[in-house]
Amino acid sequence: MKKTLSIFALAAAVLCSCDKNADCIPCQEQESQEPAMLNVSLGFEDEPQTRAVTAYTTAQDYEKAVNSVQILVFDSSGKINIYKDAGTSVSGISISTTTGTKSVWAVVNGPDLKAIGTEAALKAIAVDLADNSVTKTDGFVMAGSTSCTVSASGATANVTVSRLVARVALQKVTNALPAGYGALKIDNVTLINVVGNQNLGGDAAISTWYNKMGRKDGATAATQIIDGSTNAASCPTLTFAAPGASVANGAAHAPSTPHLFYCFPNSTSTDKTGFESSFSARKTRLVVAATINSTKYYYPVVINTPERNKAYTVELTITGLGSTDPDQPVSKGAITAAVTVQGWQSGATYEETI
Image (cartoon, rainbow, N blue to C red; front, side, top):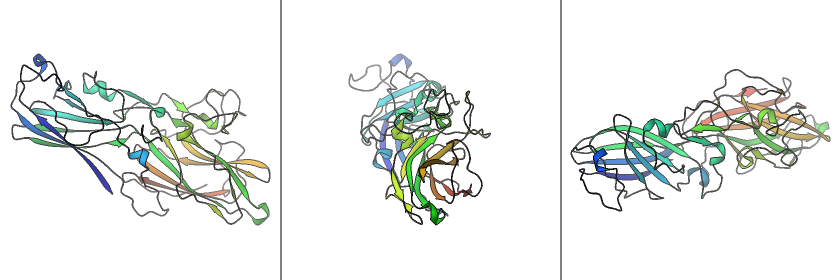
């Protein structure tokens, strides 16, 4: 379903006196041009598509919450033309600007941007993974932009805002072990090798990693594996879950709402595995930790180059004993993992067997 939030911006003639309650820039910095009408429309999409695995693309309330809207209009030179803090309003917003070629940005649930002077500075604003929240009153940072030419007869700018994060949903874990193993217990699930930094432009170089190699941040020993207690995950509400679910042989753990995890895009093409005293870039993995016959095993599923605003759905079938290291692949044939890449916006699909 496509959800659209409409904001109407009025481009008015530039005067050398400003309403004290209006958003305006100093008169000497404004362009003296003809009055025109600029209509700005914000929207985001969640359109499920049929895939081999039933993709989970339902947007949670906190994922689509709009708690603040900021509109920034830049002129053709990239300088700020007008800034508007629209609060939580999504319609009836009046913005005074000038005619000409414009770049129109909308930032939802973002930091205070009123001091921004150029489009380049806006795009460079840093966002940490922790700036996103599963609390509806905080929500997820979203941004988007478009360009348009505002003439005296008016113009329309359709801006699609999207989340900066990718989402990974663990939808089902099936116990297909040989019958003699009996039930297994899903102790916890962790998203590891998580990229923790991004910018509003969506093109930041990776500089921050969370849950590196499945260990707590700052770990100095291979034994400091994230468990949610002694060794905590970073941004735990976004990267960690502890189902504590017992799954009988031949049964599955399939909660009505999948376990959801979030990260920034990770374009790392090469990969390393296992614990190293000095971390190097590697692929993001969703790791299921399960206890089988009193021994804990790990089942990592590689999330290959997660992208912004795309949802990745994982269904995991456990057919054998796993790895003893959360960042180490399982021996071939131990598990079967089906991974669907499905957008909150549209995305590709692939299946993976490990």
